[in-house]
Length: 316
Ligand SMILES: [Ca+2]
Ligand SMILES: [Ca+2]
Ligand SMILES: [Ca+2]
Ligand SMILES: [Ca+2]
Image 1: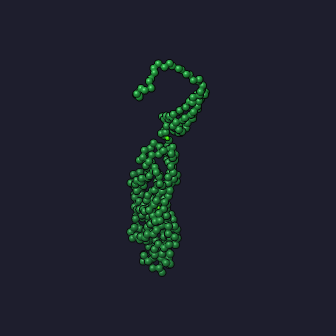
Image 2 (image 1 turned 60 degrees about the vertical axis):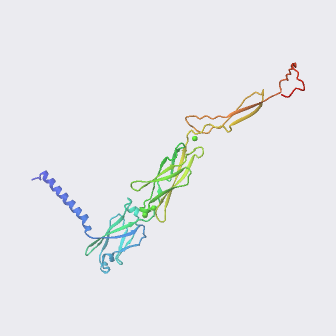
Image 3 (image 1 turned 30 degrees about the vertical axis):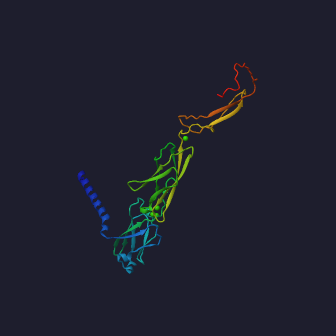
């Protein structure tokens, strides 16, 4: 007779539970053994000895020669090997902490089991990989352009891109520096995860007519020994505002001409190149000196003398 549907499901669930239990058991049972921990710096040369496992695990070198020793490393790379003659665990492939632990955990481990056959014994090894300062900070974009209005007030802030440094702790980015500038400085703020954010701060008003673009160098510096750094060029393009009235080259223009000359005054002046929507006015003075020409005969009028004055009259 066929199995009733509910019974069938029950059996399936029992099987799944058993499977889950055996999976958990398999994942947990090696932890019953004690773990042997070592610590090495990343990027050590191939052939470098990590530790003498035989000595540390109390294995007899003579008896090891006839037994199979296998390293079960929990990564996709081999990294390490075991020398049965000396009992040493040594490096066969470059261990790059930044590749092994890209998420920047506080500690980076390489885990492996040493499996020795006949009789079977398993040893758990945790190899801590310490960071060295082998990466310089770098900016994803090495040139950043910013448009800042010349009417921007001192104190205004402009966010700058962050640099990245895959090293950790003191070996990652410590601070930022800005090249000397009359108009700008930087301020650094630390985010909740410790990331530093850089703001460019205007310290002195800009004048496009004086300097149309400012070239600054932003440097990210790490805290390692020796210190490593990376730079980005920051170009501040000053955007025009209509802050200059048209101006004449001179305040006063003087010209001399004789009268009766047919007069045609042509003057030109220089306007500064603002393109504002509210036109500004400029003014200058044009002075024309007209010189007299002797084109009129003198007119002489003679009037009769009506009063006489005696020569001995007192002055006054
Ligand atoms: Ca590295
Ligand atoms: Ca490193
Ligand atoms: Ca670094
Ligand atoms: Ca202007």
